[in-house]
Image (cartoon, rainbow, N blue to C red; front, side, top):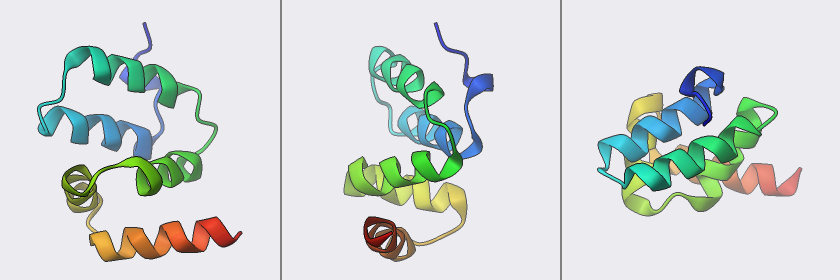
Length: 81
């Protein structure tokens, strides 16, 4: 089973977001396994911007100290490069 200590900062923050949202432990473990495979914080951030729903994106943004609008802009920029 993957260990949260092996996650990059952004991936760890996503997992914490899922825990705060009360998501199922099995789902969190599955995502933790997926995020261990990410090669960079940028890869995890791109995933978060593209796949988190509005509720979890807000929690995630708060944890990062940014706004959801900033994350939406980040997603748009990342899709262009």
